[in-house]
Structure formats: C-alpha cells, structure tokens
Length: 244
Image (cartoon, rainbow, N blue to C red; front, side, top):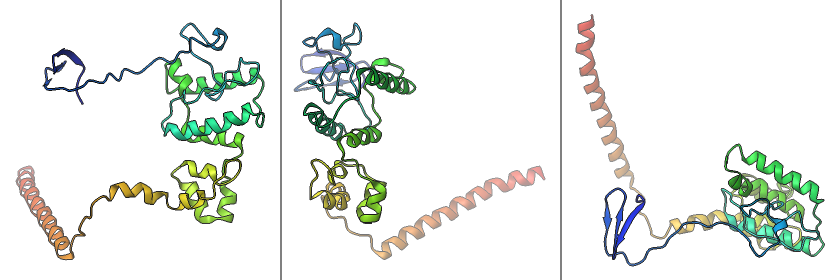
C-alpha cells in the first residue's frame, strides 16, 4: 500500500510520502465510475445527477411494463455474482410473465424504505440507494422466484443438508435444491463445499510435528514462563519491603 501518486517521471513514480518506485512497466487507474444511462428516458432518473431508481435494484418502477432490467447495479458486503445470478433468474421470469411486480406506488415506497434504512449506515444518499444486505436480499429475490430453501423442512427431510444450509456458508447451491432451475447436483455440492474452500490452502504437504518436538516446545515455553515469573517477583519484593 502506498500513498497518493505525486507525479510521474518517465518510468518512475513519486508518491506523496516521498517514496519512489522505479522501472514501472504499466499503470492502471482504478478510479471507479459513475453509473449513468444517458441513452435512457429522463423519466427513469430520480434527480439531476442521473441516478436510476430501481425496485430491488433491478426494475425501474416508472415503466408501464417491466421490459427493462438492470443487473449488478448494487453494492453488498457479500459476493456480487450470486446476487446478480438471482437477479437474472428473477428478471427473466418477470419479463416472461411468470412473476409479477407490485404497483408502481408500492415499489416506490419500498425503495424509499430501503434507502431510509441504509442511511443509518451510509450517510451518502447515493451509496444508501445502492447498498443491500447480502443474505436478506438473496432470500427476498429467491422467495419471489420460488427457490428459497425451507430450512425447517430441510432439517426434517435431509438433516445433513439442512444443517449446512442453516449454519452456512451461504452459497448459490442452496437456491438450486428445488423450484425453477433446480439442479440434481446441488445437494452433493453443498455437502462438499468446504472441501473446495480448503483445497486452495493445501497446495503443498506440511509435515506433522512429532510428539518429541511438541514436548520440547512446551517445556521451553514453560521454562521461559517460570523465568519471567521469578524476575517479576524479584522486582516486586524490594518494593514490598520498602513499603513495609
């Protein structure tokens, strides 16, 4: 991590803290971006800055028919790709007429409610409009699609899967157990998901410590603790005697 860039000198970069990096091959400016859609009707915007009001961060309430869905225009503390996948599954069903949106007035109220709740943690209105709570957001979309797992039923019918879904991690597999787009391999994927999490951490064999080595380090640490205790006592005794 470095401070801000002060200037470029050929292939050398000088930073605000005075440090210098030489022989730089390439510089990538990760400056972020503004989300604006100048090609869309102005009626979809909610102000002069071009923000687009979206019901559940997907559908503009002002459209007469839900023929436009915007994917991935959100911020969350979880992985964005599972959220976008659920958005796509929901949006295709809405556009196909398999799911229906509430009236525009109700969608506007829900948008305002969500922004107001987010303002407690994100004072910037623009950030508050983008933010969603990861797992509640996934569950809300999944319920509309009809793919949100019933935890109580899973615990009764398939305890092994039910416990893993209940305690986590929350992965997209659980939204493929039943309903539209269900996948036969979802159950096995849930049962083995921790194996795939651990696999990248096991790229090389690590020898197990021998019992003798373990006893050696335990003895060494115990001896050090005794020495420190004696030193502390020696420092405290004269002070005690002086007070007495």
